[in-house]
Image (cartoon, rainbow, N blue to C red; front, side, top):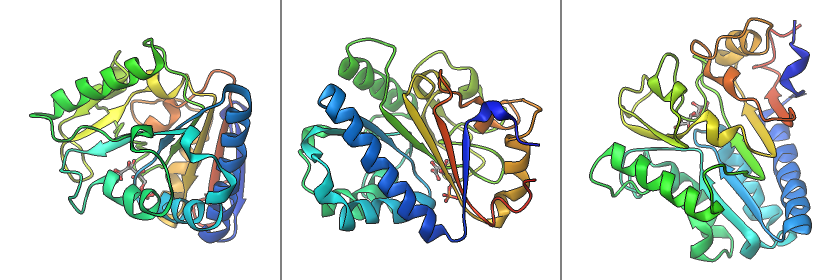
Length: 246
Ligand code: 6PG
């Protein structure tokens, strides 16, 4: 049974339909934020699912948005150089940044040039605090994916990052390669105005059923710890991932 407290769920026949809806929805929320506050703070997700969404944003919707008023952050990053094939920044650069006109000062990559993963997390924490002018950030929109083990961003089952009091934490033993990662924490994510999960693939069906179920245990299923204050949480899933839902 789906827990009614988890927000809204939408199921799409194809990942391409999901991507189309997600891109339109992002534009809509970004415009809303710009209208109200003259800026939009957007946290991008890594992984493979969002790539198509970023390409659509860039190639089909880029004229609909004032990119100079959009500020881009990453929800997590692998601790590799920005031009490494595993870098989330590189994926975002190729699928979105290279195809739009956005001032460099609006883009906040994770400083993976730092001497250690802990230092990179510390620096990114300071970047966010400085940007918002306080230590309780309120992003307008956070995009997230989910892995077959229920991880989201780089918040993995049983990891100490799950109980971090900082906005950004270092993961040093990730079950998904590479081992070292930097991730925003629940404290950073859950203050957001809107959070949108994008989940595709049959390998996530069983976990998605559990994540949306009544039994809550974020240590086992980190995606369950994502709870924006007023439940502005949206799950966009394809029919494969939704195949075990009632
Ligand atoms: C990463 C991510 C991770 C990802 C999920 C889903 O570094 O890969 O940040 O949290 O979003 O594992 O990834 P897919 O969309 O590739 O399934």
